[in-house]
Length: 344
Image 1 (cartoon, rainbow, N blue to C red):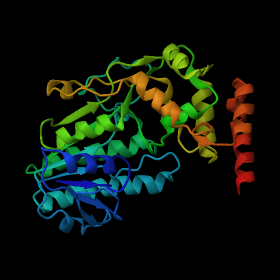
Image 2 (cartoon, rainbow, N blue to C red; image 1 turned 90 degrees about the vertical axis):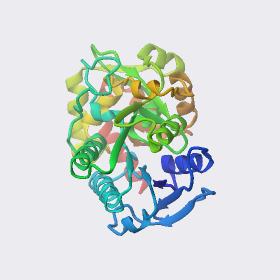
Image 3 (cartoon, rainbow, N blue to C red; image 1 turned 135 degrees about the vertical axis):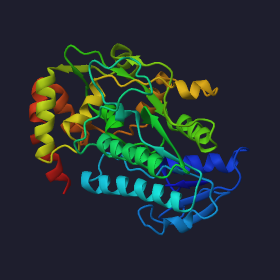
């Protein structure tokens, strides 16, 4: 059994769990540097390097967890890393006749839309915007998975799609939404939040690694939280704006290089994309964390950070933004620019 990205994040947590699992024999940990996971065999490699095939010698399954979804990554570099990495892992696994590959994407691939059913079935169409966002990277990985199933039928490909991920060292545009001075809401739409704790994703990946669950499946807490529940649990208030103003302004700020993500990413904070984890339930899996607990852990991990539209800024600028109400969205560019100049 091999795990990519084993020196950090989800990959590290998975390598540690598999090393202790009675269902798994030897664990091969792959990353571009050695990590601190013990009880594993380390093989240093870049997942984009075609020589990766040699690192998979003797492996019967590989979980590819080396995916970049960080909030501050350069979009072009992130996409190149994510797509090339997944492609190389699938090609190397086929070359070494590895029996199973498990890819980690996100429930974001379903898209966040005001008319989404709640919850979304696992076989719902993948309607995320292919526009340079994180979700677009993950859509391309999903297409690679479908292509690999056709071209290399000897290697079973499984795709895990977690809800909004929460856990140690998780720093995404979605977690930064809760570092903002206000919770953004779009007028006329009721947001619904579903989380997935890293521990629960790891337990689901363990089942996928041994073939207990196959195909494309979702991972997340049971149910969801409504916006009033989010406000009550977080102590944060919402800022409600018209959709056209919200997304139009967000896209302009992104084009100017002020905010790190396109407007499409903002949809995941205001429109529902709750998933039904039917495949995991069918094999007896249950999440160990609830949505309220996951939110509590997320809020506790903010560590004094303050963010606006996904970009971290000083507390003073965050307070100004909150006080400015609707005008804050329009004025975010000037505020963030000033903060960036002071930080240089």
